[in-house]
Length: 514
Ligand SMILES: [Ca+2]
Ligand SMILES: [Ca+2]
Image 1 (tube, rainbow, N blue to C red):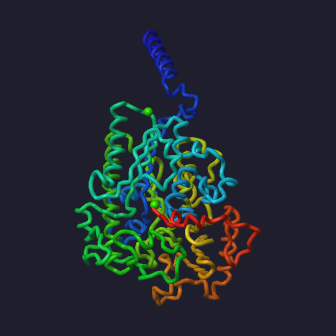
Image 2: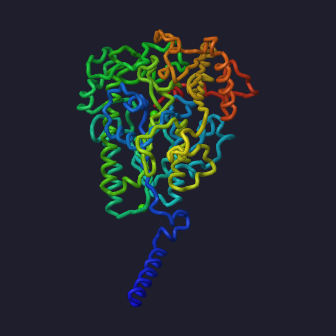
């Protein structure tokens, strides 16, 4: 008996020595070495996808996305997740800076007043840099360009390329391959460090060259002839509910690539073009879904799935025929919102929340999940309390901007069910105000949609809502001041601001939008 317990004590002592010698235990930067295995993070971000593509946001959608639907069923779906907007036609670029840095739109290193409003060397406090310092392995695959190169360089393993074709090598499977190769290598190396994998896709951004079998499924063709319309096909997705053949007024960015030059659409907004383009988008969406399924199956086989937080989102939404628009340079819900699902340990399966999150909350939230302190430069709010079921929103008011065309551009503000959008573009020739009650009019129908119900339209000119309009106008101004928006609209005080200089000699560059 005595002998046995001595042996046991010796064994326990040896175990302790062994533990002290393990690399985790001596890593001074690792503050979490007493806790059980730290969670892995798989952050999935696609390019240009409206939440309305998915059945769990839009029951009328005909998209088949079993793996993403399963993530939604097993995780938490956010109904109000937004990106904060853009001061450039390339909406992707500020959006991806916000994801990486956790900073608000006017405080980004590429913002017009960055010299005063953004600290230098910000890339050292971006997602991968922060996770590297905390002892995580970091890997990314994504498209190239219109991104935050300084932040992308921080990933230890990086395989970026723009893959918008319809084959294994030229399309979404290539991004899937990069993650599969990485996971296979980890397995071969017996690597047990926690990982942050940034799993980005180049699709469904145009050119939406889908795989032949998926195009066929959605009745679409990779249409390339400007002088003809794509073939009609009953298998194509229907027109979106808030489709219009043209936007009721000029949206303020003449010659914008996304509105006039997207291959297969150009300036066409007829039913055949829009239904075909939606079919192409769905074909690209499903190709992404297949790759996600592949990676999740691999994580399960490795025994890592239950210890991995999986985030699914897009850098912003897209119109494709809604409100007569085609691109991502507007502030309607289909484009301002992003899909957002989070699945992981402790998150109630099948839960649904409002959230009121921005993409710029990503850094704070992932840090919180991993037990890492967010850097001082972060301005996002962790929505872990929402994931934990302690609350359903992290803020009350949401602000959006698009000022990549003529200035000052568009602004939106949302609080509760109410949303205001204002347009001050084309040298003051277009000054419009829209007020929506999203609970009653979630598709933001306008008079041009011709709905009989008086609540299904823009309510800004309805005297019944004058007080609500005034309240939302005041809220917008206060958000613009709070967030250092350098512009003011025609009916706002100028606050003594000098608007940033626009580079008139650089017009072509500004009109580019990828
Ligand atoms: Ca994008
Ligand atoms: Ca490692």
